[in-house]
Structures are given as structure tokens and as C-alpha cells.
Amino acid sequence: MNRILVAIAALAAVGTASAQSSVSLFGVVDIGVSYYQTTSNYQNNGVIPATPKPDLKQSQTVLSNGGNAGGRLGFRGQEDLGGGLAAGFWLESSMWGDVATVGRGALYFDRRSTVSLLGPFGEVRLGRDYSPTFWNDGVFDPFGNAGSGSSLIVQTMGSAFPTLQLNRGFYARKSNSVGYFLPPSLGGFYGQVMYAFNEVVNSDALNDPTTANNARTGRYAGGRAGYANGPLDVAVAYGGSTVADNFHFGSTTNVTTFNIGASYDFDVVKFFGEYSKVDVKSDFVNIAAFPLTPALSPPQDLSTNNYLVGLTIPVGVGLIKASYSQVKGEFSAFTRAGAVPVTTPPPKAQKYAIGYVHNLSKRTALYATFAVTDNENGAAISPVSVTSADVGPGYTNTANSSAPGYRAGRGYGYDFGIRHAF
Image (cartoon, rainbow, N blue to C red; front, top):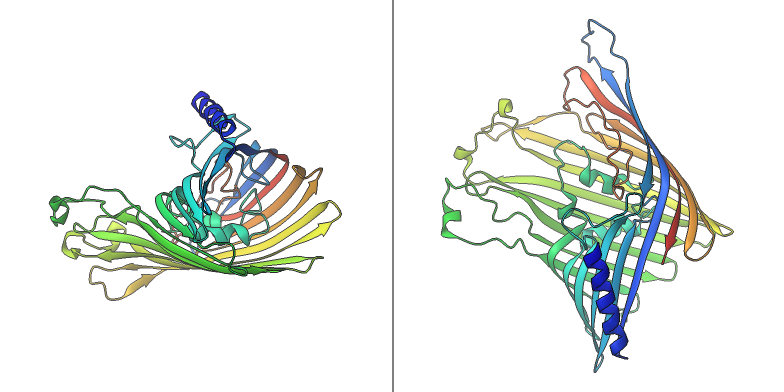
């Protein structure tokens, strides 16, 4: 933390030294009181247990972070280079105001860390930044991926959804990336592309079929294009990541995401909508070295179809928010012969959310949010927001199968808090 403050002071000094440069400090402090509760239900599937199996409930009350907007601390600047060119930087870190910590793990600037060259041609941006496929999830969610009302489309990326083990580092933000953004002077049209390097050392040893390696893990490529004019905003995005790699020795697992979202502002009400499709697929090269048998829990391919509808209604200085989101998966486990997939019930989750934001000023607001999540067929998505540092209560959830056992059921979450931006 001391090193961050020293860096801020140093860059601020640079900003005052040149009339053509600017450096600004910004951030959000958002702290509230949140309550989470989960229920796991016993499903006997026709096998009556010797003793009754009651529902299992877990709950937690916390001082939470980011119920309305993710806490952050950052500084940014831009220098005029002449001839229509400019250079800019942006360093932004997560800030957990409830526990007074900055950054996530070893990353100080875990939200965004970029340097840019801007001009009439657009912007070339290098560093760590949002992936193109993540933008639609935030822009077209009335809750902006914050708090208990956060869309299931985003929560699924880091929650217990069978076989959908997507590390958020491979989805929301990409490190080691090069991006390009179209200029803002195209009559409402906008777009971006991104490629993220996996930064591995290539070696002839990686071509040895008996050598395990992860030479492809972390690689990402994607793009987004949209149109915003007046009350209408619509955008489509597509991207893919390599999330697991043991290519010559066994398999490579890739995740592809397609989504399309839109919003329309009628002044008295603003409507939002998004459709998202996520595919997780494993490719096998040396199948003899990677035996696939049901007893060994073979890899599973998964496709999910997800959508969200929502609205916001301005009421004086306040804003009412509401949304409904659903995620549903179809997955299969392949036998060693690789001919016929073994199907299981499709996991599914639904979420209903409602909230109110009361603006005390342009920078300060009070808020309240309540949400209910229903899990089915082995899905176990937590009521805790993806922007929170709190883990929250889990579920007692058995594998998604026809065997008796506990399954994740309903989860509740609510937030009451205050947000201040500076």
C-alpha cells in the first residue's frame, strides 16, 4: 500500500511539471451490510433413506464491499504529443474498504493496468484490461455486475456450475493483452479487438507426446462491435480462451463465448437484454495416453445458453432496478470409444433481483438490493456477488446425477449500503 501511495505522489508531481500532461486520482468506496442464506434439499430419487434428511441451511451476515459499484483506487493520465496524437495510462486496483486492503493477491492493479497511444485512427492499448466478451455483461445488466443483484451470466463464470470451471482471470480481464479500439467519431459505431499472450517458452520438448505441458493455457482472442445513438445501444461480442492444456500428452480445453446485448431508454423506463452462449470443449490428440472411462470421471464438454432481461425506472433522485437472469447447461461425458455421449440432467439456475438507489449527490448514494437464486440439477450458484471479497455460505451439493443426495436449492442475498465516488 505504501508503494502505491509513493507511485501516486510521484506521478502527480510529473503531472504538475508539464502543462500538456494531466494525472488524476479516482476511486469508489462502497461499503454495506449484506446477508446471505443458502438451502440444500435432499432428493431421494426413489430411494427412501433410513432416517429423514432435513433441508440444510447456511447463512452469513457481513460488512460487504461493492454492493452498488466495485470498490477501486486508481490514477490515470494523458499527454498531448501533438499532431492529434496522445499517450495515456490507466492504473486501477480493487479496493476492499470493509477490510482496508488494495489489490487481489499479488496484483496491485488487478482491475486495469494499461498504456495507450491515441489518435484519429483510434486507440492502441497494451496491458491488463476487460475482455471484449465481458463488456456486454456489465453494460447490459441493470446492476452492473455489482452486489447481490449481479447477473447469473457473470456469476456462473466463477461459481459452482457443473464442469464450467472458468477462472475469472480467463474471462473478465486479460493480462498480457494488446487491444485496438475504433475512434469515437464513427456516427455511433464502436468496436474493439484483443489478443492476449500466454507467454510460454517454446521448446522442442513440448512436442514429445510423453511430456505433460501447458504451453497454450492463458491465450485469448476476441472482439466486440456495437452501435449507440440516442436511446439505443446494441453490441455483439465473441472470444475464446484456452483454460487447460496438456495437448500432446492428452487434451486441450477451450472456452468460447458469444453474446449480444441491447438497451433502449424510453426516459420513464430503460429496458435491458442480453443473450450469451458459452461452450467448453476438450480436444484430444493422443487419446491412447488419456484413457476415458466413466470410472475415471472423464472430461465433459459443456454448452450453456444464458439470458437476462431487466429494467431501470427513475423516481425523482432515485432509481429502481430489476432483472431476471437464467443459465442452463447441456453437457456430456464421452466413453473411451468416443462414439455416444452419456447424458445427465441439464444444470439450471434462475435469479430474480430488485433494488433501489437513492442519489444524495452526483457522487454519493444509498442503495438496497434483494435477490433470490434457484438452483436445479446440480447447479450451485452462490448468492454472493462476484465483486465481493466475501466467500459467503455454500451448498451441500452432490454430483449432478440420478443418485440420492443433497442438491443446492434456493439462495437469498440482500445489501444495504452507501457508495461514494471520487
